[in-house]
Length: 66
Image 1: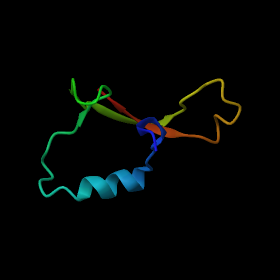
Image 2: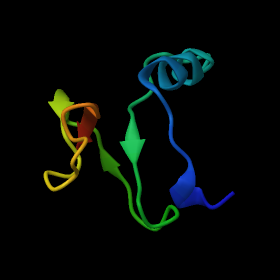
Image 3: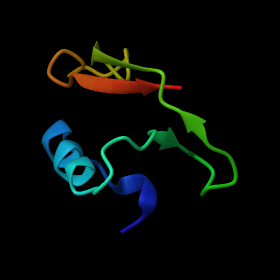
């Protein structure tokens, strides 16, 4: 499975994050295989990924902002 094809639900993400022993770790995000990292600054809900998608009102996401 390609990395780009993986998706997680909020429930799956929370479960994975709860598995960390140190819950005070800072959440970092990378989109270049770890070359650079940015900290998560904000979480928003109600984000629609593609405004041209005919099913856009059926697909609501949350977004991590960095």
